Image (cartoon, rainbow, N blue to C red; front, side, top):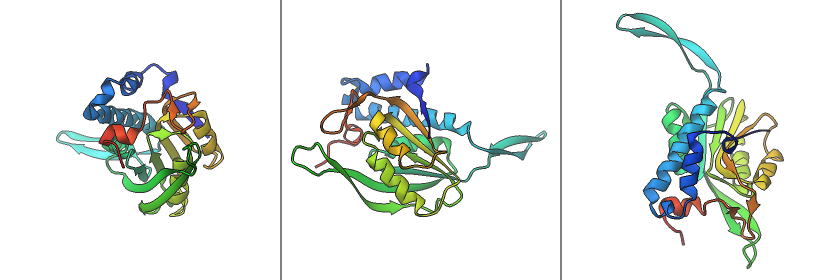
Length: 218
């Protein structure tokens, strides 16, 4: 699996990440969501450079010319609910993509909230067969939710290529995916943080992305 970590490069994504991590900035959900969307747009643009293209003849008022167009059939999928603004950013770039949605969420399996299981109960997606599958989810902590989403989607059909995108990952999450996805998968991360705390939250991270985007859940 190829891993691309944008924190190792100089780009405006680092500015957006600094704002997302700031406790004062997080008080405004609109600003927080907007930065998740913007990182999705930036990442989608970079990912677009790796796709295959074919020329298409375009007729202008004064003539014709051939312009390369994306050849891949794209399936853009996300994990509810935290993935929605990230998905929106990708969809603004890949506006002709088909879309898929998966409910996959963590469930603590002990009283101390130090052991985590993943539960999936909803999938709405077309077949991934022969398509370029792009799975987006802001948080890659243990990697369990992303692995569950990947396994659910490939049951609909074998994709020709897989890209996985997250805002923040951990070495443990990356390793989980290495053991789960195909070798030719590409993982795109805005940052990879050192690890997790006892409750399996990314440290230093920025907290619960779904709560910061939409408010606390019961």
